[in-house]
Length: 293
Image 1 (tube, rainbow, N blue to C red):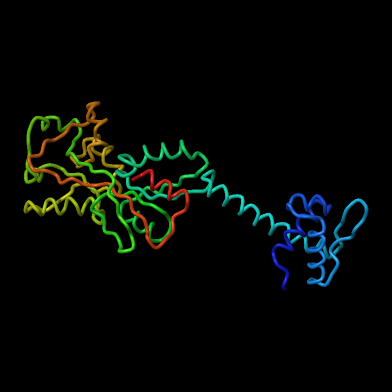
Image 2: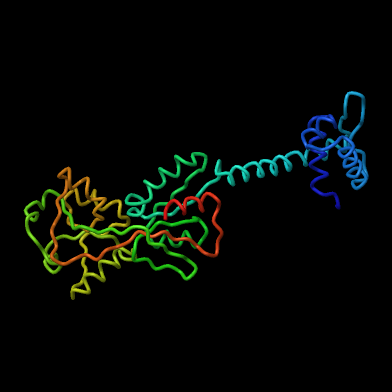
């Protein structure tokens, strides 16, 4: 059928207002132009769509049938245009972010607060996952940006930008308070119950490599799926564990946990922003990325 969308859009407004002049005003067109478009549409569809009268126009049975289908289609398209315009002006839209626990609490949340204050109409959806899952979600197109920590095994299509460094500290619950004023080497920890993230996580790989560099094997007594479980488990005196200093600080200051001093240094780690270079960013995601760097 050769009729184009513009004809159907004009048909929609004339049928909606039952008045050619009013439809022309809404369309910012002229009455003759609207009349001509309706005539062209009737010619192409080979049927009469409107009955003209002094009071305006009314739909023929054929026009009623067509309007039942055209109305919802036009309204969806017009709604889409409206939402797109709103998103482009950052008055709407959604940005999808993947974030690890450390990336979320040590970096992202404060920046999201500023972003939300500046663009309150933009919806924010956060997927809180491990680094491997955050990378997988980014590659699958489920998120536009990911905030992760090093080390990270990323694909060649992903761009990684380091935005903040952090250090881990070794901490324990109050039941281990006798260790507070002592210093330890990594080799001394084999006699203590170690809490760590499960194999397959980047944090586990980081500490496995750290222990190997000192000729040691990392053996954890309790394995956790996600890093948000570390502090609660440590606070309940189930063992010792490595936690980002920024996350441990409140509990250290309140006395809920203690820091165990290590003679062996723990290498610095970084929080990174990842994006897929093969996928375009939404306007909201581009603006957020600017604020994160």
